[in-house]
Image 1 (cartoon, rainbow, N blue to C red):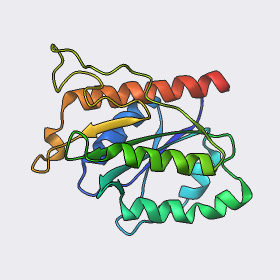
Image 2: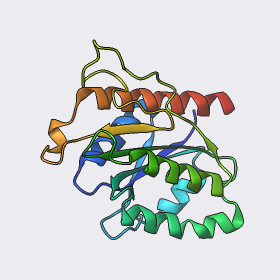
Image 3: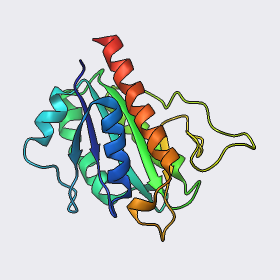
Image 4: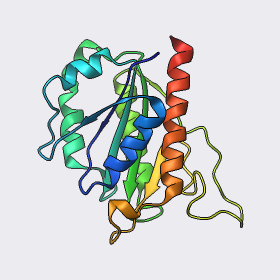
Length: 183
């Protein structure tokens, strides 16, 4: 079994719920970036031991949260030694609108993974883009590069769409399957 870590920042709890669903699907460990942009004690060691790192952040103003960016900047020490070379990476993001420039955030996460000489795992799920599709359909938001989820700005984390959670679990399963195939 591969060791998978979901490292994420969540400003209001929505991204945390998606991180949990991804972790459930992947059998992964959660690693939260705190409100000051720091990992808990032992966090860097957990990432070093992982076979796959799934990164998650809300999309704020067309990019990752500053807390996630602080974590990414701190990872330059790992980059310098190529400590994450050839690890699997994947990513997800949440924002209030259907587009909300989420793809810019996923592309940013992809670039971070490529700088670390990693290998990227995309969503691998066709979008639900028929007339019969509903907000609770799997991959309704239509991601390919990674997982995209949406929570209206006035919705609590408890009010998020079931389809996003189903997609998140399936995404976690895909990351685990790819990681197992490399083991």
